[in-house]
Amino acid sequence: MTKTSKKPQEPIHSFDELRKEERHHILRLYDFLTYSLRKEIKKRPWEFVILFFIALCGTTIFSGILITLITGGINIRYSMPSIGFPNLSLPNIAGAQLSTGSTSEFPYEPIFLLEDIRKGSDDYLLIDIRTLKEYEDGHIKTAVSMPVYGTDLLMEDKSVDKGLIRKAVNSKFANKKMVIVYGHSQNSSIAYEVAGAIGGNAKALGIGWNEWAHFKTFWVPESEWDNVDINEYIQVREGI
Image (cartoon, rainbow, N blue to C red; front, side, top):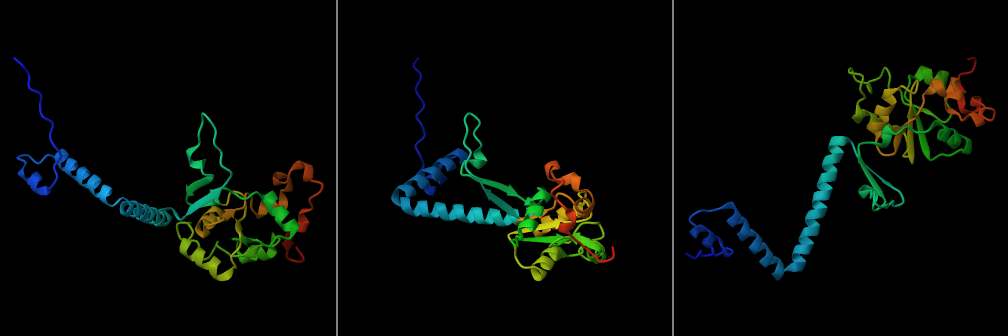
């Protein structure tokens, strides 16, 4: 007894043929759709290429807007490509590192700020978020006051009002290459929240006013202890 081989199903070329099928299998519908798509692509290849790139760009823009709304921003930092074998770092192949949220999670080194002040750099904005009285009593040189504590910028649950923070920065201060935020001490979580609310290149200073003014040895390299007079980098109210 010979076995007869089962004849393979031919691709379906139209919906009318599909309707004639006694059983409308999902795979048969998929077969029809892929066949039709291949047929159309062969007829108009360049139109499908253009359509593909339009869809890709649209999806990318939509995804970017969605991620921005959810996380508060997208930060792209460029660095030299690093391709190594066998450990290949995919996110860095093109030299671009992509991350969501704000770069404020990485604090700004206080020694870098000291150098900025020493050089007279004006491409950064230094914001003191303590109360106005505390600012007037003493603050880091070049800092401007934007009180958060005891104001409507700080909500009842002790989190910052991101909308008001952005509005305050945009309305009061000029755009700068870097925005640096500091509070009372290095443990000031509010400083990080404010920097995150500002977004962009805003960062929290790695220390606060207390460490900057009173604990130089905590953040200044030991080799520079004798060369740094901290009084040159603070401004205090006369008579204090």
